[in-house]
Amino acid sequence: VEAKVVWKERMTFSGMADTGFELPLGADPSVGGDSDGFRPVELFAIGLGGCTAMDVISILRKKRQDITAFEVQVHADRAEEHPKVFTHVVVEYYLTGHNVDEKALVRAIELSSTRYCPAQGMLKQVVPIELVYHIYEDEGEGKSSLVVSGEYTPAEASV
Amino acid sequence: VEAKVVWKERMTFSGMADTGFELPLGADPSVGGDSDGFRPVELFAIGLGGCTAMDVISILRKKRQDITAFEVQVHADRAEEHPKVFTHVVVEYYLTGHNVDEKALVRAIELSSTRYCPAQGMLKQVVPIELVYHIYEDEGEGKSSLVVSGEYTPAEASV
Image (tube, rainbow over all chains, first blue to last red; front, side, top):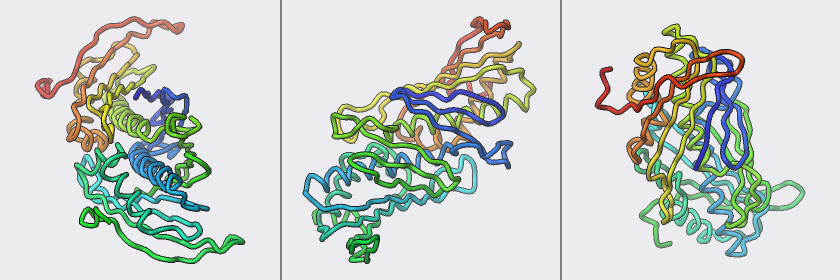
């Protein structure tokens, strides 16, 4: 992985990766910034969510699940003291589709957590990560209803 | 920290943070993606670079250093086996200015590494991070010359 951040002015940077994409980085006014870009730690949260989301959608599509919408939210608590590392992370999977198999989803979350997701592979060594899921039935016309919620924990590893 | 990733199609997601910014996430064609966004692990590299870059520029400006250009590169090696975590990271600071004080830069890098940067605070627990710097003298008209290169290691902690 090759990436760089280039200083623009004050606390404003541009972040670039070798794949060619670019994003704005900024800081909070409380530390002299202008709120003009992602906070660096937000990129950790998005990286974590994106990594496991890609694993899960990839596995569920291989399992021929009919997914119509999918979102992963990441909530990270941080220490009050510097360096204000994450102290607790909750990853919430919101999956909408037709007759989605809960066991298939739990298995996908498990495989991402234990085998495939590098972001989880690194972060789970330093912070507890809770994995929560919600399955919604797509009822058409933009409507959906919650079918089941649950949590994947290592104890359920062989679901 | 609150963030989410929303599925668009195939392996394409949109990443959003509570501060209101949005970025594209994509995957490599080798895993069914369309190379249409950042790879999730790239966000870890940019988050790490952005976090320490902000610390360093903030500290150097407080020390009245005259900085004209600044870039931080992050090179991360990854394991060949899943989950392909980072195995070695090099952070390179490229600082250009007028008579920049090397000790001030080393001290800024040290403070970021040991006290302020949450990305380093988390990642350095799971992967060795090498911190290398290069100071250039700004000679005007877009020209600059290398003054000194060095590496910050914990052994130099009291420079």
